[in-house]
Amino acid sequence: MIMTWLGRALILKVGEFLATFFLWISTVLSMIKQLLKLKFRARETLLQMYLLGVQSVLIMVVAMGFVGLMLIIELAFHMNLVLKHDSLVPAFSALLMVRELGPVITCLLLTSRIGAGIAAEIGSMKISEQLDALKMLSIDPIDYLVVPRWIGSVFAAVTLTVISLAIAIWGGAFLAAQKLGTSPGEYFNTVFFFVKFPDLAHCIVKSAVFGSLIPIVAAYQGFNCGSDSAAVGEAATQAVVRTSLYIIIADFLLTYLFYAI
Amino acid sequence: MININKLCKSFDNRKILENISFSVVKGECVFILGKSGVGKSVLLKNIVGLVLPDSGTITVGEIKVDAQRPEELSLIRQRCGLVFQFPALLDSVTVFENICFGLRARGLLTSQVEIAARVKEKLKLVGLSEVVLDQMPTELSFGTQKRVSIARTLAVEPEYLLFDEPTTGMDPIATAGLNQLIKNLTVKLGVTSIVVSHDIKSALAVGTRIILLEDGGIVFDGKPGEFKSSSITLAQEFQMGFGYHA
Ligand SMILES: Nc1ncnc2c1ncn2[C@@H]1O[C@H](COP(=O)(O)OP(=O)(O)O)[C@@H](O)[C@H]1O
Ligand SMILES: [Mg+2]
Image 1 (cartoon, each protein chain N blue to C red):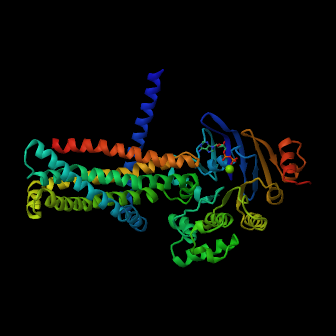
Image 2: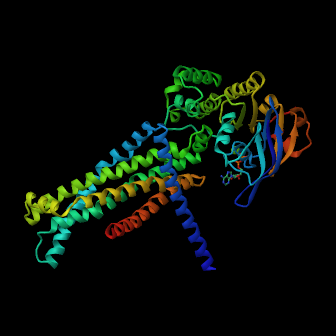
Image 3: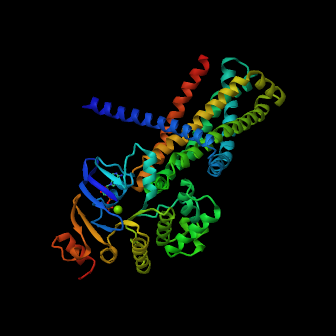
């Protein structure tokens, strides 16, 4: 009884995951087709870059600035405890930021800022029959709705990660000077000695992958939204929950992969 | 000709349409009546492939509705314009963009002048002035939005028009205007239409044929005159409920 229930739940989840993955593939193919046919939806795409990316700058900068400060304090405590000196704090904090926290925290924040919105928008378009209307006008909803959001979100994830990393590292320099007495020159020397190009590449790849998950999971929830208004809220919530989970799992897989190669 | 053959559709094991068969020939104006929730919208959506039947076939002209053939489906959707029960305008673009969307997406007209002329022509048909063109759909009243959605459907000049409750939510003057429009399109332009409606007066005045649905099946299919004298309870209820006495 319990086993069949669990089994059915598992099949449903796996089915949903595969369907989401299929939507990801369709979106990428649809984008390639737009580029090849020179039917690129420039206006929608620029609008989404603005809505998803530019409008998220402030919250990212503030949040990641504080993460940068926290890391310095926390790592100084760890290093003093274990190694009895704190000269490597800048290097450790910058590496952790670039390889891990930068992309993950930025994209989790981005998920809560835009994932719910995309799911609710597409969900209410479904209930109000706008999606059916698009199909009647011979416009593919993936082509018209998902591709611009996909590009906008990947753009937002990568640029916001880079911007917030810069802010966090600058914040770290400031706090390190105040608390540890490390001069900014010394700080950046250590940082650049340890943080190398592969770490940055690692960071960009991660944020691009995470950014590409957000609109796909959200759009999937929107497309499969039920037909009452509560369903729109449910789709938005599920979009954030699923995306956050997928980002954390993808982060593990990518980290594993990067250390393996 | 639209031909529906033994159409069955259920949702979650709940049978909505069972063995529906009828055909609509060129120039007819068929009104489909039935209580809320009987499956009228589902029936219309089946015709254009927005909902897929569990069994049975539908052909529009000589083309079979088949989700596996996107090109043919797109052609059917061009030849069969569907006006939705709710306006379903795209709320992120202006009224003008909404009306010309289909023209652009299908590449029917390319010159900006021709597109603008077509948009204005259809807007006039539904009795709206050009001031709404630059407005966003959400700025308009429900009745106006609905008329815009009719103009959007008319823009690609379909051969078949499917209306889902076109006059629900409209004032009596707009209702009369729309009935006149449907009649004109049928009589003058030879458009074939299927109208889902609760409005028995419109059905008797405009329709050339009435189909009554109940419990997933067709309980009446005939001329308006026959409908008036029908002995079927639901047909009588429809006429009494709306205060219509023949
Ligand atoms: N996509 C759907 N999923 C599940 N049930 C649906 C769907 N579309 C319609 N239904 C159900 O089918 C029945 C008929 O709906 P509809 O055709 O909209 O009725 P109406 O005759 O008022 O237009 C309703 O009970 C509705 O809940
Ligand atoms: Mg309906």
